[in-house]
Image (cartoon, rainbow, N blue to C red; front, side, top):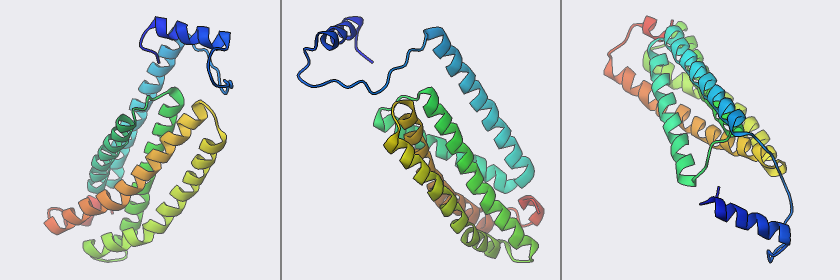
Length: 208
């Protein structure tokens, strides 16, 4: 944006008169009315809040204690992504919001893969500690491969895309990197703390 209407008008005059010392190439142009833009933003935000709330409830009901840890990890994930956006001075557009919500789904999916592996190990009769380590070991390859393929697609979109497509791609890339970090580092750390504390040793607390 511009600091004032006068600045915007001055730039517009320069563009029309050809007074700029460089060649101007039109890459992307889009006109959105203020009412339509505000309405779309409000609906997107509402849909995102409802979707995230549904995910949080599902994780607790289905995975119980690990689901609660996953929700905490998801909160950390959101703070990391928002912190990166703030550091970059980025503004979330509608495509950017779509990319952010998609990356939240990717982050949740990583935790689901880990917890399903954990449940399989517990059902096999392994101890909690062994199940956590084996579960992460088995889940890591799947998490890395799925995120890598999505990352490749996002990079291609950013390289060949313009305007909103690039915004969607860069948001998705940041989200994927944060997702890998929170799933592999933070979730693992929290589960290890939980097991070492011996607060919940019954397998039912782990959805088994």
